[in-house]
Image (cartoon, rainbow, N blue to C red; front, side, top):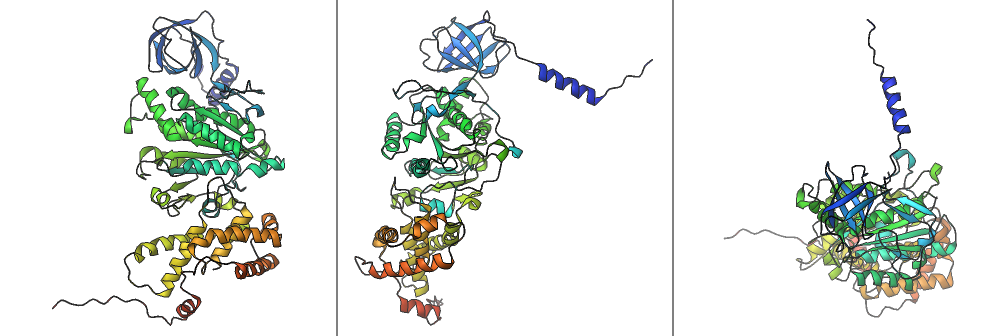
Length: 545
């Protein structure tokens, strides 16, 4: 009797040949299902045994549905649109297609819904093809390290929490703390790169509005248009009035449009505003589909909901064209609680976070970035070298200022060293303030932070700091070409450039007229402090008699 031998190689080869040769059957036009139940944007359908996961189904009235739950007898379908016309016993037909959206440059400057249909009344969109929403993200070997800067135009972020092309940087904070403002400023800051016409500099932007008020989305579009940024931006709109299915799909639609450009070797910036509302919409869908709830009633795969979305943001290898997609997801917290379920999930997925503190916002510190909690894990290597050189100790300086500020509230008298640190910290904090829709070039940020770090603001009243900065930039533009030189610099400030900058700054400081006398510690006190010729404040404990 012949001995039976099992060869793993033969089995592996047979399985491989079967998988390669397998083709799913085309949708059978005679295969018709029936609506069993319908309501709240969900329908149960029977009689379609060949339905694929995420297949598009068509109801009698033309409404589309997305197949989600594939049970033995019934299919759980998320209705994509108005569901009031869907009733029991209506026919349901397969399309044989999974969910996809049209893509192409025709989407620039347009507002579309999560199915890719225009909603801005400007006519049809010229497309070059379609892209499936559920496609695998680029693998490890298909990626490249993040080393090119993506400037936000905001001093507080570009100096201390830099963002690189291909990075995923979370913007997190309570409602009404300026999260959307940071995202819009970043989009507007790409205007000069777009105007240059250089494909290596140009950044196509996508703003995904998920669960926002319709009036808010309209104001975002108007702000982008007024600032000349709409021509290179696509808005994917899923307002709060839309069904939960649309709010669930909107971020994937935006990423599919962006991935098309990324794989063409272009650079993309995508803003998800906000993923908290997408998670809530997905929770509603999952509960209606009777999936088992977990923590805070979210389904067990809510982490995968965001991880598979944000993993699509990447810097591709040169072999794949070197394109990139930078993600700025936004998460809304409750009472500054970053330890809640969804915030901790997204923090663990992203490459850093910008935490906006409501107390700072209410104290008129805008952008209200909490330096102590915010971090950028990979953006440091992408920061421009001149800016990196002058801002190296800025984060430490501000952290020390925050701790001293709390201590100074209870101290009646402070030594000159501490007072000097408090004065400089107050001026550097004031310097980081920036109005909305006023992005600043990297060169201007560099000279501003350098001037503050070198002590040129120490004798300037806090109320005059921003006026000093504006006139300082104007002086450098009129009298020198330093801003252009620093903008093109590939290394840290030094040599002739630094000497010329010092000379120009000294000349401007002599010309600048403050509105009132400064509140600094004074040069004489500071010199005495440096020479240790100062009596330090002491606390003496006395025993009770």
